[in-house]
Image (cartoon, rainbow, N blue to C red; front, side, top):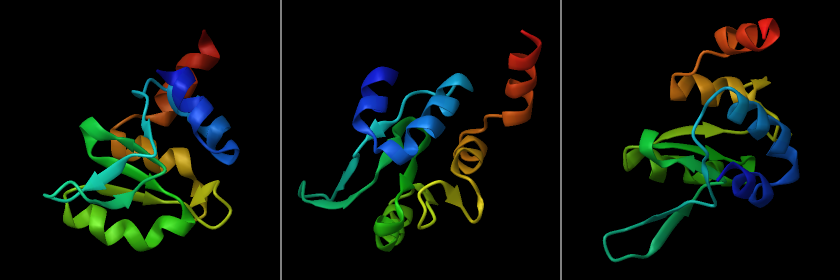
Length: 112
């Protein structure tokens, strides 16, 4: 599943997505769509962790954040450069929302 997610995501996000994989997250669904009660797609996310109701939106998708939030989803919105969220690496925001500790996992990897 991770190989498929990496192949489907945009190049600018691949290295961060590899880091998220190494930290133990479940693979996201790339291009996840939100449909209304009639099955009409009302929003799309770059990637989503469906079980956690978390979506990662590109800068160009930031206008869809309200739709996702009003449907019970957490949103992480990339800055214009597609590598940060509010100036910090995007993987920090995603891991925080998923409840994954970055410092503990990176320390484990250094001692292994």
